[in-house]
Image (cartoon, rainbow, N blue to C red):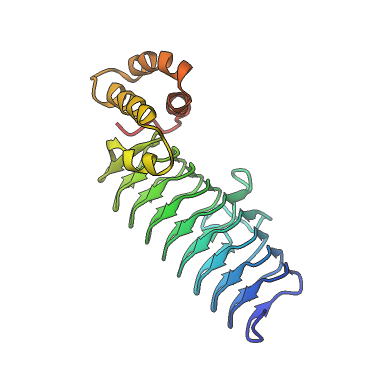
Length: 256
């Protein structure tokens, strides 16, 4: 299933059923799982591991060296899960020794054309990166996050699960779970209620999340006061516990 015009290093390991299109380059230290499809003119460099059933479209660059001036060629890695789609001109870089040395991507993610995942990022599962959505280094993205086209996330920022970043949003601070943000700089707009419905959250859970959002963003309370108000709810509701714990662990402060 390897086109004779492709260049595949003898030090790469390809599982059964892998397809490699013409003029693609698979470098040493690359491991590709079963049934993964690498389209024409794609480049995958290692050390990089891709799980099963991924699809890398033409002109994508996966696993190349980090775009970091401090990087000196140290052996770092990129680890990608299963069933991810990388569309045209996507770029995903390996980690650096200034963090854990690895960039990680979960399962079932869609990276549309020209999306970029920088060094040392951690991306969960079931996310969508619309066209030209980009991450700075060391960013963490939770499960089910949607990033609109042309949005950008500052290095070291964290985006909580089920958050929604509108197109063109410039995110400089952490975004709590469930929250929709937009603008430059990105500001909270509402709860991602429609997304939560699609993922099986009950009406009662969504009401509780809306109330938590109101306490945090609409009650003119200081952050510590809002968290104190939310703590009793967090003890009873896992969805609010995730909200509160994320805010307490924020490292760049949260969008407000």
